[in-house]
Image (tube, rainbow, N blue to C red; front, side, top):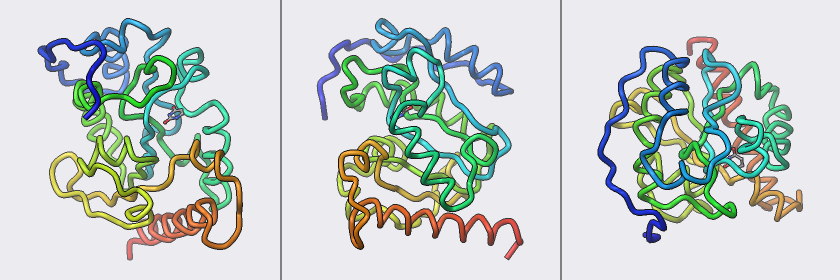
Length: 214
Ligand code: URA
């Protein structure tokens, strides 16, 4: 586990939000970890709060910190394109957020403590949005949500039934993070991009099944 560069006690449990507006307001005032010190903005979400699909990434980068919206930089553009390739519009048919809502300095990975500090916000987001399907983009999201450390290459594309509240009754799938796909642009059979496209086709199928009630 990485050492937290700004150790501080995680004391205040965030007040329970009864709406996403209240949740955003709570997040904007949050100082539960050291990431609050370096942020320009708290990055809560973009997309449709009534979507059946939630995508959870790692944490905001520079462009997200500046705009206040998740996945708006190059990785976000690729995520949008990949979702569009299976007929999912990222703004109207998905709700997009991250395991941490403030930018880690220098785009480093969020620490386990930072993820734990932010987790009550994410849990509230899951309850309020109530998605049927959750995509975990990258190892930090997989670790932060499912508690599984490492093994994204082996575990991506596998459906996992959510076991405990607020995951119970939902289907979760780890996928490669779009930043990793930007670094590995090959589309050859068996490449990370090719595999992700197949994973997303599987997601499309599950959403279709849920929509048709079968
Ligand atoms: N990468 C993420 O994981 N989240 C963002 O919001 C942007 C890039």
